[in-house]
Length: 342
Image (cartoon, rainbow, N blue to C red; front, side):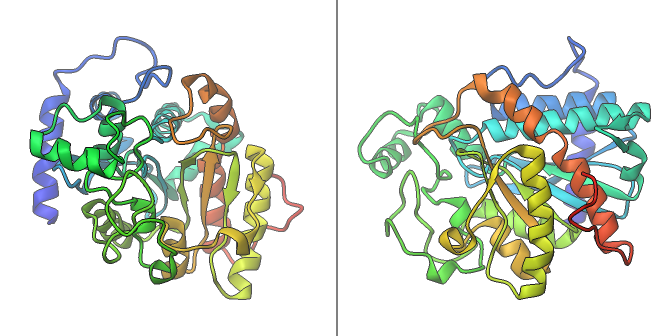
């Protein structure tokens, strides 16, 4: 597996020289952010920041599209930030990619990242997986014309015989990826028992290739903390069914994240249904994981591009803040108090 990843990475590096940035900023979050755009931006960023950035293949989607991870920093410890679990939530990919570029620029020039010394990344690296679900995002953005006729018929059936895929949330097999992780999977109350544009949890946990790839990668890199972005509603999920000490620890960090983002904290017992990445991460590693829902509430579609700037301002500090908290919490004996500055 490692040899295969090394070959893929060498292929990327050979391709990089054919790309040249056309503007100061590579990532453009003011456009519909596609899988192809993300892939090209990763190449451009690697070309610009060769020493500060690593790219690794996480795995492949059901349709065979590579799922990529990018790392900033030289620290042996790390945190992980994910986006794009759901087809209609590609604005989270825009957010994660913008964060990646901003942090890279600051790290490269030895500048502060929103009040934190960027040298922190020499101790705690950050892994970014910007798009977990490339198939679902492509379906939502483009429709199904790129697929064979027989597969188009299957997807139209999953979409309740609707040819408009604006609301598509699932992966290419009609599985909701954030209902696929092992923790609490059995207890999820099924809203549908067959593949669908949303809510189908699958026949068994980790059935989806995308989820198996993310789980394997996460176990390899062993993050100290995790953030997985979704949309919409400007709420912060932070809790799964853990012991009192874990809940107390995570609540302190969630309170600070709520102050930073302006998102309200979810009431724990109400939505701790299981099956999500954060549910699994907290259960497996006993380490904090948070799920921010960006944008004001939009029903069954993608948030508009017009909300991006506000969501960036709310979330730009989240990654570096959690890297600092991870160092404080797991690499020293001290735990930050509620009175500690953000």
